[in-house]
Every structure is written in C-alpha cells, then in structure tokens.
Amino acid sequence: VYSVCSRQTLNDASFFYNQIMAFRERKPPSVLLLGNMTDDSLNREVTFEEGSELASSLNCHFAEASAFTNEGIEAAFKT
Image (cartoon, helix red, strand yellow):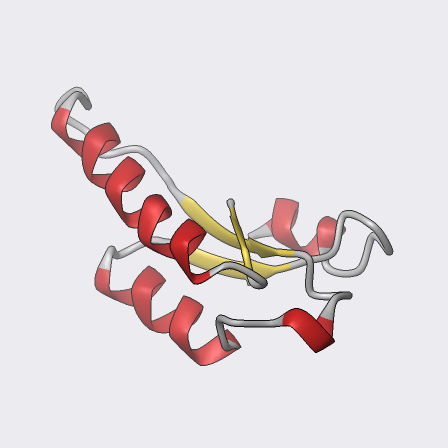
C-alpha cells in the first residue's frame, strides 16, 4: 500500500516489494500494489498511470482505493 499523496511511499513500496522477493520461497507470492487516499485529489502526487506502470514492472496486480470513502476497497480484494 502506498499513498497517492506521497511519491516517497510509492518508492518505498518498490523497496518493500524487493525485500519480499528476496526472502520468498520458490513460488512468488501474489502481490497487489494498492494506491490509497484517492479521495484527497487536491494533494495527489502519484498518478494512476504511475502506480499502474510500477505494478506492471513488478509483475503484480494494481488497484486504487480510498479507506476514507470505501471507494475501490471491495474491487481491490477481488483483484
């Protein structure tokens, strides 16, 4: 999970993904990269496209959601 209002959290998500992959067992885990805080559009720093591109480069699923408004939460769990 990263905040769409903080580019640093997207960079952190990439770092954590690499840490998970370094310690995984044979079969890679199913991973979802989730951009949170989509309700705060005025402070958005990371575009949908940037999050999607990172997820694609990491070969993982991608979704965006808002824990505040519950928008996208159910869809993220169905990904």
